[in-house]
Length: 355
Image 1 (cartoon, rainbow, N blue to C red):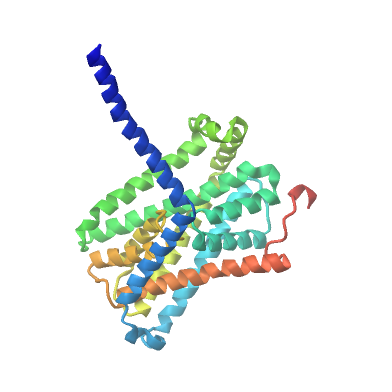
Image 2: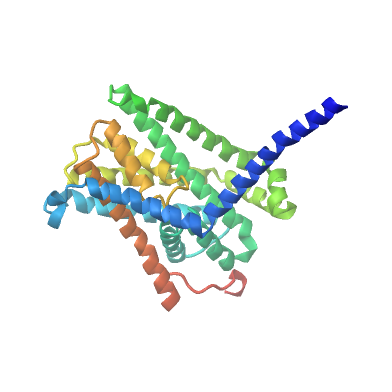
């Protein structure tokens, strides 16, 4: 009896720290999701960008004397072209759900979402904004709006991982440097397979519906399932969205390669593609605001593994990459301001039934 009592006390002593540890993790998670966490992410982004600025040779950059504008201008235009391609993809996915909105409205909402994604903590603030626009424009198709955004994210991430795997494989098969990138190849290929399996599961199975019903409720879960199945049956839409996704990333990678040439970095298109893909994947981690800092330092790190170092043109490229991204995302801020003041390009909310 005494021994069993001791065992019970010991078990309780072991269980208590475990429960306390879980409660502590929950408290830390809640803290990081609040204002304190936002401050930390802003500070982290600024710290990484400051480190990059410290490594730039500003005597070469002053007055943009060292910039090759014959390369820089196409880079700027290509980077901007990637955004309308993404908005067009989302419009295709919305129409597949029976949500027919004018192109002006879709592009305006998309740009506004990009602005919020880039400058607000959370990583999905822009998606919430886009979903809010869709729900208010067509309250009867809320599940379709959610399905369109989920598909938009999956297509974008899947195309990125596919191109990253192909570029890494091609680079390593050609006797490229940095065999330390082999784990990145395996990881990106495995993640690409996971994306395909997840996408197929969403549109072809029902196993996830009972799980989502616990969070959304049975009616909402069933509606979301029906919306994803309806999208999966539109093979032409899937093929078009996949092609658009690949086009978006190719434009982005080519833009970054031209920007590298503009700042004097002699890196091949494959190398830039590998580095950019890794940078975008790293930016998806919830470590900073909109991926700022993390994306650019990851770009520098992979280029360093490829033998280009971390100083001079590499650091200049990373900062130019950041400035170009911020400049285009600010277009969404202009769209938001115009919409509030004039109702253009996104008209003030009216339910579709009353329109």
